[in-house]
Length: 413
Image 1 (cartoon, rainbow, N blue to C red):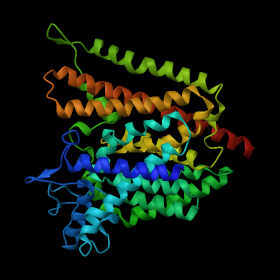
Image 2: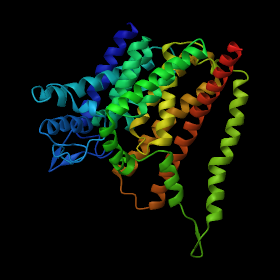
Image 3: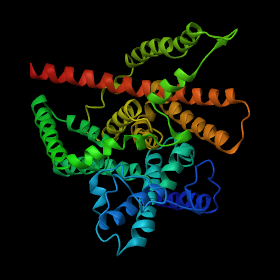
Image 4: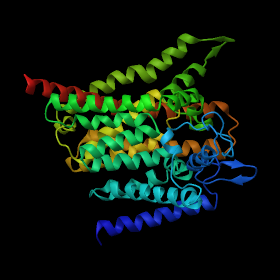
């Protein structure tokens, strides 16, 4: 049986299981249910956008007040999503079938990413598809899923005009896809890179000028970016957790012990890890060849990694963006045959992160944990895993960028 047929079969199989888990409400309350006036809403994030279109057509400013949304959530995306055609005429198509198709394609890509390469790691697709970040994005039909699909097209096909259009299209929905522009670095000389980056910047500036009113309103609604409850994870969330972490002795707060503890857990291991990384790359030259070959695996790895890094450090509600870890998988698995220990560290770090995140959310959402310290410990461990995984990805990206620009400089001289 060919891999293509297997991928289709697995996609239908996994999609059916996920649909059953959602329909039978088994995913709740692990995934926080979106309920209003006793009605459970599926695809709540996507529905929010479509409902906003209904209000716009009634002359309402949904950036200020969105009465068409059951939870009165104001619009926090780009204006382009408020100009969808024929939403009133094809209401069921927009509210049900389109998010269903988007989710199906997303699941299919996940299966294909794992099934394309012959490796024992193929079986771990289960831990990704049934992880909480993936189930959350699918159950909500979040816009980030659509943006990830756009990124796939950008990375698969290298047509420059198409890529400009799709980068601007995704940027028009949310801000972070501007970082997809890293793909413009796949050029032979610095002059080409500079021309492409300037052109992209000019197009973005023109777009911002024409959309300035709506962009200001989006920034005014920045409080809505943070998400809610358990889904608030990012570097900013880590800082908040550290600030809330207090050690008391005889009734007084021991800040010295607290920051010494943080130094031991975060700062000191980071130095050792960076040293270990440079030791690895001395014997693993393919780690510095990401920019050398303009193929799909390298392109989607770079775009996904810089997206993860930017969202982790700049956006508070990082939980939805964790689906972009999927974009690292093709590059990791395509290099699996090299039996590289650092690649294994990266893959299993991602795997453990998704497994722990899922267990963490299940425990917190489904069980009443009387020991608040246990909740705090789980939260702290989640932050710790995210931090070190993002450190790995950041170092790989930074090292590749430095080596790449050094090579461009040497060619130019």
